[in-house]
Length: 116
Length: 116
Image (cartoon, rainbow over all chains, first blue to last red):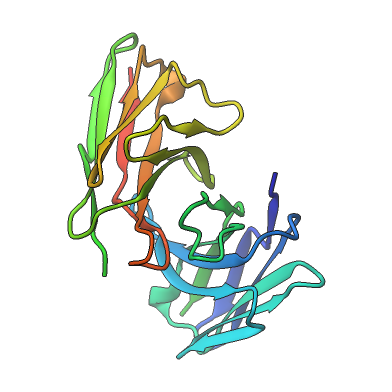
């Protein structure tokens, strides 16, 4: 089955700086790679996703890059703000249609701390 | 966006009792619903995939006789934890997906189960 590795487990950055979280996956059949932000005791919130036919996607301060050959994808947050502090999870799924027909395999999470 | 609810949000039960958790898609019909479990400070682990009108597919290591899943309609899936024990205490989160309508899984708010 799929295995998703996520690094680092904890990331502390100064407010205004950039943060980068990296994930690798094992199953070359994976096609859908979402990123979630989760606050304590709450549901995961999708912040950005990318599919295997795209190398990069950006949404305001958030961007995701995908290297299918190397089987890794990364989340980039620029101009970090205190409200960006949370746990971030990457995930992978073989289903191209948004992970719909298949469950998601999650990374272990990154606790992002934004220092004021 | 698509809305998914869960009930109850929190439940405390005695060891040996059974607990039912409901997952509802409020504004769409879900082709597939997924159940995840999240232990404190850990990642989400897929437990099972549930399709309306058919038996759920369980991930390796998840006991189907202990975690009963029923997906009786396109808007409702239930997870029953039978003969619960303290090690079953966890955060249970469902997600829902609709073929051809939405392009990702939408998560419910989660249910915090505490078994005494």
